[in-house]
Image (cartoon, rainbow, N blue to C red):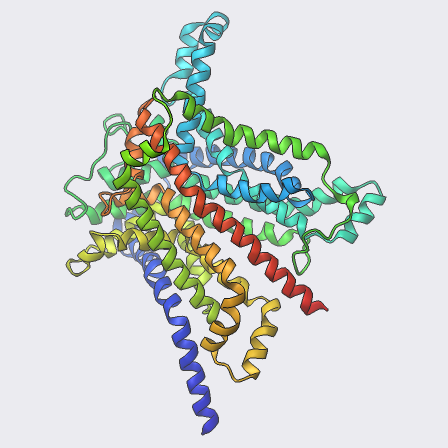
Length: 561
């Protein structure tokens, strides 16, 4: 009887510890996924659109071609950077581990606008040359809105923005490789061949992940009038129909009678139908990414700095990575600053956009706090399915997630959430909560099992073990996950645009309006301001992640001893 009572108390203790993470995951992840599933099953329009029409097939092909090309370019650029990260021993390698992830958190709208300014400056300085050699009519045709030049810029913008993903994955794979195998390959003169064979899995996974992430971004393509699945989803939800000459995506879009209009249910179902083929491809790409990640030959623990000097990356890898960093980050930022007609002043920018910036920071901070609560709770008591649901909502994309939560909150008794900050916060956690859940899952690896077992033998329950043992050791990586969720919430575009009008007001919808202008000081100022604002939580998250990984590595080494 006593044992039963103790077990009952233990179960109750574990349940209370896990409750915050479970509740947050159900509201932010499980409910929108359930709505999407029911929309696909119950709505006749969605069932009808399961069969691909010729237009939808071409739309899907165009989307995969454009974003697949961006993924290939990003992966090619990420390979030398991955070697600099994974086999660099100097201080520059540590600095790259901080800079590259932080650059990935730059707002996609601002980054794309920076490249549009690069292109504008280049065209202004070389138009006479191209006109003389290729003819003015031909060059004007290529430079038209949505033409070849715009398409190439969009693809390059996505590749240059997301190249940090393959760089990081390849770098981590190199850090985890068996150095004995690589030293034998070096002696046999087959180091590069063996290394690339071992990196084949991470390279495939990187290309698949970048394709998924690029396919979810519509802010890069929409100002050019280029039709992809992401732009069509927004068109359908805002206007009720796909883009056409009579329904141009270049014209201003507003919801016909507000978010609560009677036709909202039909528009939401049509938006789900528009993305069904891409969702199937996304699931396939996710499977390829998982399979590719498992192909890599990795040891059980990360052994940073434990490889011999003979395996160091050659000097030219660092030089090439630095050149790519200056090209992909430095050039668009320089173009933004150079295109301003007025002097650059950070205090003046904060004063000009203060209400929107305060609103964005408030929502981002609340999202980070929510992620911290969920992360610490899951680190105290893990519940099966948390990472699965969080990953599924990320794969669904910000637009579908926002549409699902709008429909769920379209109840009179949920007005307090739909008309204020809770709705975007819930959507942002659903979009990026997988980062917090991944950080929590890292505290349930074998390296942490011994610590938990020792606390359990001393009679500590789940909550006591979390408070006294796990949280004091794991707080850097748990807070890092929360900071990254907050930073990404500041710059999220697909979900934020669909959630407007928002309370408090944020800066992203205004940026989307200015993005259609070829040159706008307000857009440039706001873009630079967003980059500066997101830099602090991004850097904090990256640094704390490094500290947390170092702690996990030390624990693994202590266990082996």
